[in-house]
Structures are given as structure tokens and as C-alpha cells.
Length: 225
Image: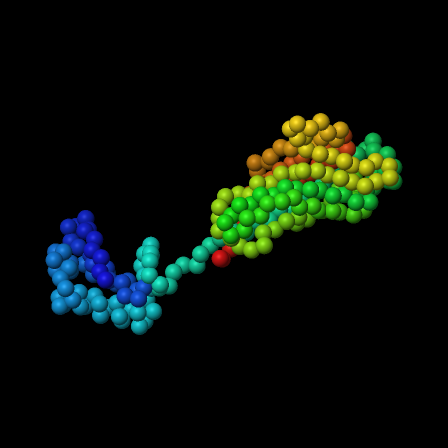
């Protein structure tokens, strides 16, 4: 099957596709290119298409359709990292016993509605034996199960931070409409300039009473579907 395109020079370009292979030829008049297969020009094009197929010559850049060779499809893979650190000076904090937490659990809500992923839920990350004065290391708390088509940036939000300690436990929450103000509130703000090369969005949060800071970072990288 052939398609015809009028060029700026007033000549005509005929393109033949045969089994996903494209070959072009230019003619002075459309009728020269549009004759039935008995026309030598179109026979030549058909022959060139067959030769190109035999030599595995693919379609031109930008061509669509057919079952011939094409560029690999590119998708995206997301993951979320988090860390907890002191949000204020620890110089006046009490002794070592009071500054240590036997465990610290951060809960994050993630919503990724890509058609071939569709993840929604609250994930939790727990660190053990945490020193308030040094905080935790940055750790992956969630990652997409597979590479998927790009359908926008997932939504990420901090839900709560709980720490176990005999002296000074932590029970911080994000304020929710219709409920009482938390005693230890998590105040969230978005950071527009994340530092990591793969970072798409960073969120900073602080607890108003326990004096801890939270950093949550959404990462993304391209991948082959």
C-alpha cells in the first residue's frame, strides 16, 4: 500500500510499506507515482521495499503503525525514602537514657494511580535503638513493584510518628479535619529543590512537642517497559 504527500517543491513523495518496512521515492507529478502496479515507478518502490525487508531496514523516524522494528517503550519507576533527625538543638536535652528510643515508626500515605500499578495505602518504616540527638539514616520505605507507564507524580503524605521510650515516648500526628488538635502535631511543608539527582519531590516536617524532624523524598527514574 502506498501513501502520497505533496511537497513544498510541488513534487510528490510516494511511500510504500510492506510488512512494516518503509521506502520513499519522489515524483514530479502525482499521477506518475499513483498509477497501478503496472507503472514502473511503483513497481520499483515495491521492489525496493522487498529489498529493504530482506536487509532488515526499519521504518523512518517518526513513522507509526505496522509490525516492524520500533524504539523500546520507556516507563518510570518510583520509590520513597525517609529519615528522622533532630529539629532543634540537643545541647539542653537530658542524659543518654532519655534521648534513646527503643523503636521509632514513621507512617506514610502513598497514592500512585498509574493504570498498570494502582497502589494506595499507608506504609510504615520502623527503626530500632534510635538516638534523638543523631536521628536515623535515610532508608527506602516504599518502591513500585515494577516499571510502569508515566501517569503523573504519586501523592505522598506523612501520617504519624511514634516512638517507644520509658522516659519520653513520641506520639505525633498530622492535624485532621473534624478531630482534636494533636498534642504533638506534625507540621508539613514541601521542599521545591530536593538534593538527590533522582528526587522529584521532598517533604520536610517537624513535630511541635518532641522536636523531631522528618524528611520524605519521592524519587523517580526512567526504565524500559
